[in-house]
Length: 124
Image (cartoon, rainbow, N blue to C red; front, side, top):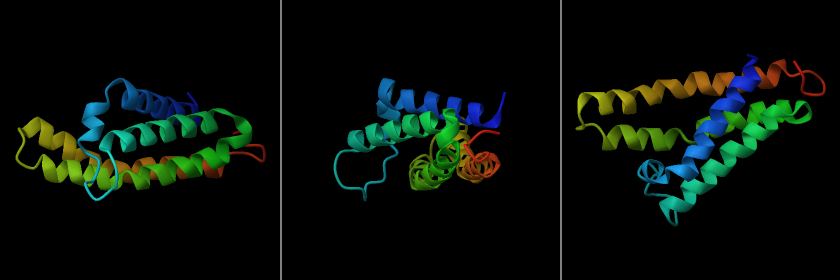
């Protein structure tokens, strides 16, 4: 499977989950953001779906890779909030929350790699 296809699949899956099962995402929206957590959950889900679509199309693949990297960096504060909130949770939940933190760096790099390897029209 090509890297851009796998990344688009990941973003499609998580984007759909933001709409199908929004409650877990609501819980990690930083309190400092204005408005309803559900609004931010839906906005981030929509962003993930839009980035996935950009990655899927050759003409927008480079921009999609850059958008993916930006998106993964932008959601990092939610992962920090999750880790703080779950610091006293059972070991498996803590491992999930803490494991998400270092995972963001490779995800950002993945988006950048897709962008840098996209050809002139976005193809590989």
